[in-house]
Length: 338
Image (cartoon, rainbow, N blue to C red):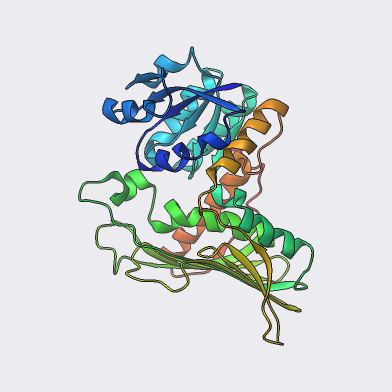
């Protein structure tokens, strides 16, 4: 049984709390940490007898691993301290807010031989896995275009850390779009070039963009597109993936949890259907447990997570220059120069 400490007991932690009953055979939650002790005590109501504190180093003597669910600007310091204390870490995305911070975390995890897994939860959703499997099996032939749509309303109160680009690390693209840049690369391979257009219109509470449009060309000639907004006052697509291939089109509809095959005969075929919520954090936790037990590199390991963040930073930079970003050569192992 892996003894787990939860560091950060805010809204994001809630998405894990109602899933722990699925992973009782793998984890024992023994500690909850938050700067607001009342939030930590609220978590303790679900796990009788656990330690609650406002100082995370106090739990190091009791845990094997940490679930770090904190504001982005705190990821680096807290995760680094956990790793140096000999703990495995499941770190909410994005890994950190600068390249140098990410590389320091990678080096620490590798030198201490600890698992550092980044919380790209959409990789562990069974509908996402079914979508990826259908692509890999050439269900629609070679994919030439893939679109990811995420339309939601995410508004924070005045003074919230997520409104500031300094503490968020960027805007909607960096904070939420990082999920989908990661997925585009997982689905389509190595990026070659890309563009980003963002706007604050519709999301005045944010310092940077609340709506993003990203287009990326990949080595195999395919095009990936991500449209994401935190300003939706209504939606038809919600969360939806569309892949166009030479033999048809795949639609992953997350509102209905269905994978649908469309062809020119206009007879849609359901390839996968399941009644379950979007955030399948139990699958993510089970993978984390397996990696700890076997020493296996996570599917969402820190090095590959760095590559998707490098793409985003390049896209941001090219947008400022009104140019197309050169995304070649963002290798997974390029950390030696630091």
